[in-house]
Amino acid sequence: MNKIRHALALFFVCSLMSAFAQDEIEKPAETEKIAVYVYGANDAGINKSFGNWLLLKIVQNSKYAEVRDWEAFYEELAGNNNDNISQITQAAKQYNADVVCVVSIIEVFGDYSIFARLIKTSDSQIIRTALLGRSLKSLGDLAKVSSELAGQLLQLQPPEPEPPPPSPVAVDEPYVPLPVAVENKDEGSGSEDKKDKNILSLGFRAGFNFSHLYAEYEKVSGSYSSTMGLQLGLVLDIATNSWLHFQTGLMYIQKGVDDYKTITSHYIEIPFLYSVRFSMLRVNAGPYLGICFSENDKIEHSGVTYGTDFGLSVGLGFDIRMFYIGAFYDYGLADMSSFKRKAKSSLYSRTLGFNLGVNL
Image (cartoon, rainbow, N blue to C red; front, side, top):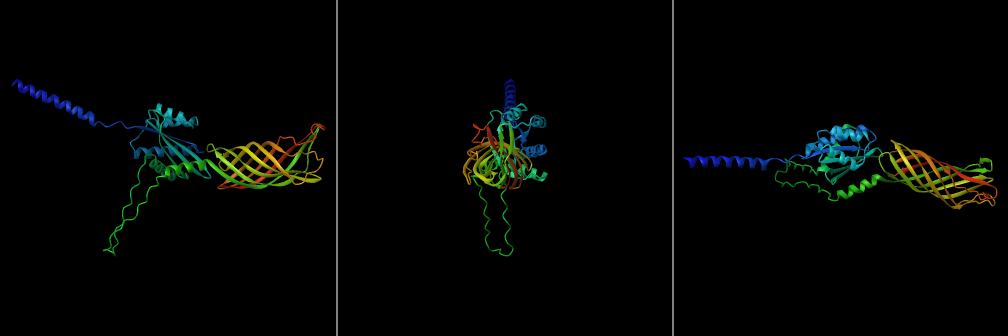
């Protein structure tokens, strides 16, 4: 009888151990937490709304779960206008996020270039990237773009189209399925090319200008009569973010002076401008370098020496879709007087210009 009791007790203990072991094996893994941070749009409301939509789409379609204090995480970064990836990752880690989705938005001619990265907070390793160029003018646009971006980041496959029903007339004809579009495996490299194109853009400029020489002789100063010239060239625009750009290029420009006879000098000019954008308005400022390569009429003993010209350039313009309208003023700092040692005179170039352009 004792042997039967011992056997039953042993069986009961083994059953309990097996049940606990099975529960331990079948216990589901803890869901990884994710946070989303969006920056770069001129309107702060777009950043936060887009972040809300994207977080919703990611949580609905993946193994990730939303961090508990997502609002506090977002407000902490947005309050400091933070666009440092390392600091964003560290902040997400402090809020117990296993993964952070960082989205950068750059406005390009009325539309938006959207670049997203999934980053592990443990080692700052980038898991996946995605790039889209879309319009964000309504809540419907935000929802649609968020869904597309989440699909790229999570590599969700779109559902295959259902085959159409057979024709009711040609019942005896065999059904031939429609061809399914093949996914482009080079999409990653194309996305990088598109990103570079959005950051770098080329523009064509043409216009006219009025230039003269400003003279200083001992305690007397004044300006010679101005002459009209032409300008033509290319501009390279580099977008460091949505509002700050750097511009350089190569311009042909005519400058000169009217002193009994018109002297026109031909320059190759290279600007080095910082451009601040406020929606369509640009404000430009920076130095320029000009090299004179020809004069059409040189007056002997005129006292003017043409050569290298440099100075400061300021201006403003408007980007209207792909077109540009602008004005600028070149304030020359190079002394062009050939008599500065003997007569203590100085001559400086001044130019007011207007131009039109096309942004390619």
